[in-house]
Length: 216
Image 1 (cartoon, rainbow, N blue to C red):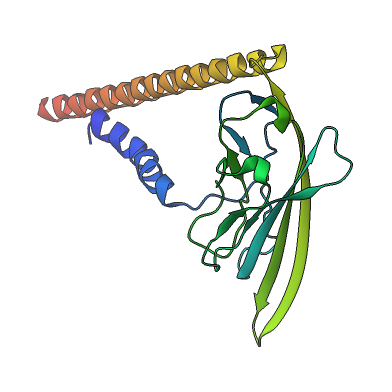
Image 2 (image 1 turned 180 degrees about the horizontal axis):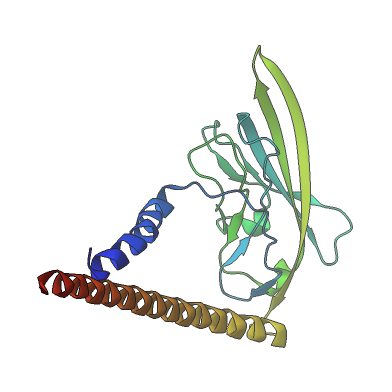
């Protein structure tokens, strides 16, 4: 077997893993929502509630509430129920025609309850509360209801400002990606040279044996 063939055999498992990666199902991760919105632009209000037991089916509805900076209590903002005819319903006239569902699609088993605000105004600052009303469906028609509530404090600014920590984290991310790619290239070159050297040594030994056999 030549050195090139041995290198291809070593790289074959990596190629198979890369082909299988898109087939894997991603795990649910409860990522925190952004808290700084820019006036006159769109903004995603993130709210994710992962189930403790993913194998148990569930029926979930999501309710959003809003309390402005000067308000004392929360008011109904948005309701989403996939099984209803309307599905998503805006309950606060201040957000009429400006709220859209941005969470889980085509399922009653909601884990992402995010919504999207169009044309954010400075008056939209405040606290947004999202509540998951989840009914777990067990065998023998047994049901268990759970509720999860999360608050998101939003500040609307005229212009987006980036903090030093955000800039440094982005720079470190790119540095890490480039470093990993360089390390992979170095490892591939090292393996290729090692396999090529082993192949050349094997050819020399084979040629030496043939020459020794030909001698009287």
